[in-house]
Image (cartoon, rainbow, N blue to C red):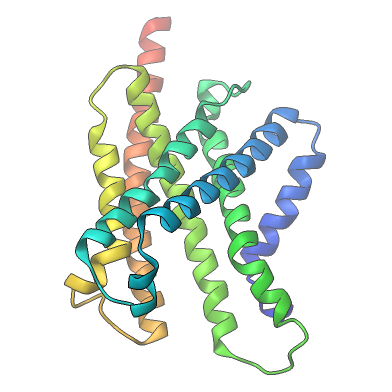
Length: 235
């Protein structure tokens, strides 16, 4: 069922090949390090899940608020590795922050797609049976792409404020709320509580786009203020 792979994911693969073959080594190197940091982040989360979450509770599929909060904290480890990827030495200047964020975001999304969906598609590639599940998986992969780039952009905002020693904990709080909404939101918010696959996708799309718009405003304001500060220094 490879023909059902999302168009965006195919574009990411093409872009990856272009970046690796590109003469602009700063993008290729940064992209490669993004993939390495994602792999390390995934391994760390797997080890922590295996260590901290009892296997019996997973088999029983029982809901425990303490364990759900622990899962949120484990997922927040990803933020630390994204921050490391953004802090990696590069020749990007201040005017290319958006390019750096896009590069790390695409590297993270490509790695996540390979880890999460590639084997799934390859196993079903020889099947002639059509299932809406394949289309739904492709849509979710595209939504994850928007979410991942938004998270990377917000972590970059946190990094910028950290460098200038400004208060930046509200960025981390926003990320925790985002992870919490994905994890325990359906348990406490009736709007998100549904068993219908299409409604779940719709809810995920709405929350992701809302989160992306908030991050876009924050990211745009920070870049605008930095450009204004640079102009004042020049004058």
